[in-house]
Image (cartoon, rainbow, N blue to C red):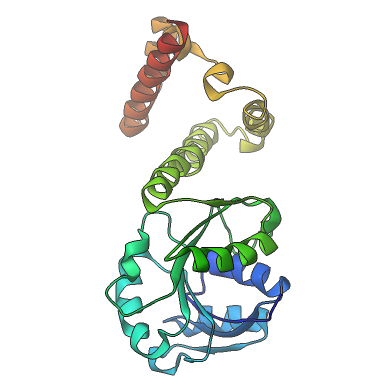
Length: 264
């Protein structure tokens, strides 16, 4: 595979993991841009490359420009870099931003690399096991991006912007909301000095079951049969946490309605 050059626009969690995976696959990381020097220099040190905090100093000599930044600032960064760096292929990693964000800037080659995973700076993971969803401005660009995607992931899929938004939404439920539930559970346990670690076998088994069963088949608990006595007693325990109580009530209602649909 021909060696190509990439500039990173953004130096956060996604950029950190993707850039190292691309580098290991043979991509040359030529520069890191971030508005904060600390994050730019930290990632540049990991990649043994240069960094800048000045958009006007971003090199125009790269083959790819990978934008991994907050959704709100992506359009302005594209607009700022397109006049100088538009000969390269512009890419973003956002779940909710359509491919069309690149339109109107005179770009001919652009696309999306969306990795479906939760990333932390200080936690390593196997990128080859991370599903990677690709969208591109043309079939020729898609074919090019798919080669690089396949170099870092065993699961590469084409996906439209509309479908990617729905995928991102589903990931919020499966990951972000699930983790928030862990946080609520940790708060309740701490009130009785019970270590959170006591829940880990339950959490692990719950996650393991959906590898063999559908989520609806794996669902257990009093909400499935809507055991009102248990539900009301547990909601009563949440008087000091009114938001938790509302979440408990809504989740229980949703679980019961899904169980009823399954049994029809």
